[in-house]
Length: 436
Image (cartoon, rainbow, N blue to C red):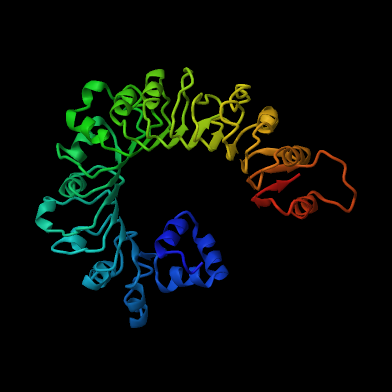
């Protein structure tokens, strides 16, 4: 649709792979213009094989129109450093909105010293060998920089984060210990920070955090967040998670991956009256059902589902299994409190036959997504005949079995095509499915 703004396409195509973007370009001329001519979503990759001495002038001029750029030195060879220094001029800086640096041999000072990046909004840094004595000496000017993502905590990166503390809205970082948290954020006040992603290093010898490790500035930072994403497979944050969640009372989105949630942590979640999206890729200790008046989307795991009670706005649930061999069933009344509102259900790594009867009670369900699930044709027929409002059904990486008798000329693949003919008002999607 030519009436849709470019920014909306930018958001949509951020979820697509490169091959999907190319397919979209061949489907719609407006998408093609945005993805190619405007260079809005396509990311230019600069490395020793794409930025060489013999590039035609026309190609160099074309490359400088990209707004998203990734730079990877890929090792100390060729004339890449000189070519890059010549390529990254003020014309390029004036246009780039998103910059990714993955450097091991080239000093990032070459990019930032005495430089102006007026359009830069997002900066990603992955450079294990980079160190700068004093970031302040670079006199970097980036008035619109609002997002920083770092793969490791170093002195130079910490200085960069603290330098822009007054304007950063989103920070993503990996931390090995609570000392890293203090190191990268310091004692600065992050008044505009609304989104924080914390991923703990997966070293098993790293210490477990305690409440006494969290400083007053740490707690103040959490209190202003709207979005919090925690990944902690080793459980280092498990003891302090209730304290962190108790401070982050204004959250609209919460994602916890890896570490489990204690009863006290769940109780803190139940106090988040503004919470709209809750993603729990972890075990949840059994608690009384919680009430979240504004919750719209919930992700929970099959073995330890989060029990909900009063959730009047919940219309989307994703349930996945932490272990493929787990056969623990959902509570029989799990959907009872939400079946009047639930419109979207995604099931991943689950045994469909175990909860088939519960799914069939979801009278308002409009979209069903099955990911890595074994499904028989009779089960699909039952779903289609029971769920009268179903309009979208998606099978991704599923095993599709035929358990009914078919004629010799009717194969299971033909049956999937017949579904689309027999139910023209339902959109069927089969992605990487096997027919057995």
